[in-house]
Length: 501
Image (cartoon, rainbow, N blue to C red):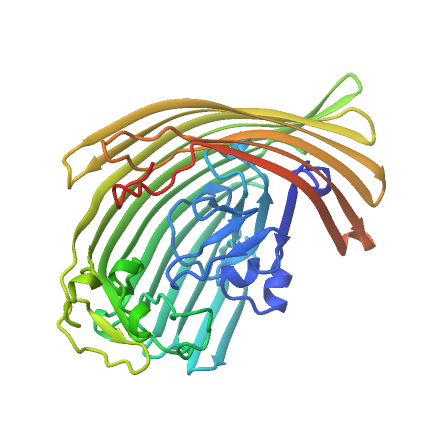
């Protein structure tokens, strides 16, 4: 409960009004104009977000609870999006130093009755419908039912998309100061895996942008997620409150695709300009996550100093199964047949020319992460204009990998202390200066070729900036200068494909 201008960190909030006014329906569109955020195109099954140059795909939170599973998030059930740039390890534990994205869902409103329904028609026969209905069952019990369904073609040949999501939210008022909320979310995406087009010699007109170079016979990749969330909030008085929350989430991505071969030695298109060899790949990525978090926040005074304190703890368990298989074309020096190279003519594609190759096991492992953390943060008002923030978090975490191909089981336990320090100074009513220092870490998942689990990636960040607020908050801005340092960063093992160093 701290005004954004008093926080020694760069924060951007995409509000419900902005989402509605701009008719934003997917996360990439919502984050497109957030400074410091860049987006990968992805393949339509998950959101790939970079904050300050760091991949933050696994730095998502749902109502303040960690949500590591990677899947496509439609905004049909989202009230607002909070982007916290810079490290957040002192509060949330493991993560990239670029920043975090917190999605705040629409929740049941106690005592209200309302409903909205919308239909959208778009290019390529796209049709989307969504509904949002809030019902007051009793004086202290309300239910909110939110859902959408969307389907249609795309500008890409043979590529169609089908998506739906459903979120019922139950809100219970246990007295005037206590609230219990339960959410169930189910979502599903069906669309082919699409790697895009080929560009040769810098010519973006090598092929038309609508040309699909995969194989329609592969069918769709299916991504689905099911989540349960329970939150309990109690206000002891005007200064102190408690929040307890838990998430249980199960996600799955599965399917088969035909993707361009990237190794020059296996790619005949660099010789004749039209014969694209392809790999055939299959994926089963299955994950389960369980998160618990408890926080107490409050304000008090010691002498002439006012404190705003946040104290809490959390525990999360994340199991991620990756079964990845592929078959690759042989070297062009061996003069393979077009069928052996699984070739498609990019200038005149004929789908279904050859029997679909059977992918062979490449990676089949289960990664298990467990982490327990304790944190404390205190923002102290030294004067009417000067505030400092100090805090730290202790994490005890373990990693375990079961490699079903090599038969090697690996395990590692570690702990980290992540400190933070910040200062905020108000020059005048519209302008505030801030500076911050923090440290963080991220567990490196997987093992090297010998089966050894990697040391965690560690980071340090220093940042300074200015915040501007005008027109009663209608116009805001942040200018930030920062430096990030990272150690133990993984890279591909060129001598052992499929492994890292």
